[in-house]
Image (cartoon, rainbow, N blue to C red):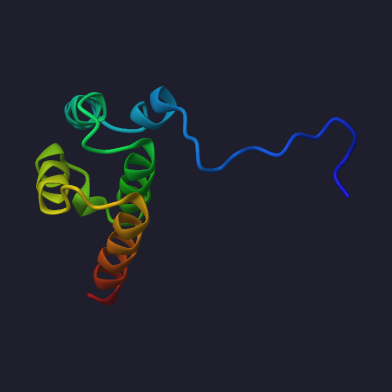
Length: 93
């Protein structure tokens, strides 16, 4: 039973600024641009952060642009599975 006054947080909503601040300047600019034109959502950015945290080689802004171009129009759930597969392949190397 939750403690009195506890409010469940909605995990499906991410704070845009908090997410973007986790990336370097160039990557942040690329992601902000794509968020602004609504080609990606905050959920996509959170999945990319998971990729970055696991796979250091994936951290440059060019790789982010390539990933987002390759997955353009992919719904967040499908994108999450795609990221998980990419992480699994990276770990298998």
